[in-house]
Image 1 (cartoon, rainbow, N blue to C red):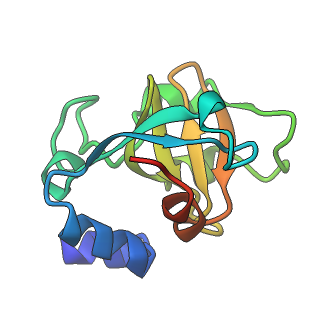
Image 2 (spheres, rainbow, N blue to C red):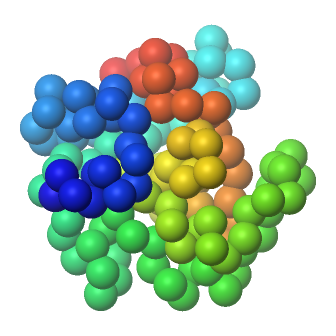
Length: 136
């Protein structure tokens, strides 16, 4: 497990959260638009270590993006044009937002949501920003 975390160069604050919340976090609120107005916020679930390594969504561990999504990538109009198949294949999924996968972008460790239809959007510049602006 530690080798996987090193391979993906995951933020220390994320690894500390995994250790602190053994069962993950469920139904946390985060608003990627203003981080103040929780009436407009969306619910997110952060997986536990055990859930990360389950095979619930595909024939690979949950943290790996199911390959059938990669062919459908649609970049949000607000996004930079650097998302490509290689980047998406190397994203590390850490949870869910509705039906979308909450993932680390391997280029800069920003947080993205990748939906099953291939739509992708960045929601936070870093995990620290995300976790500091949630409401449990």
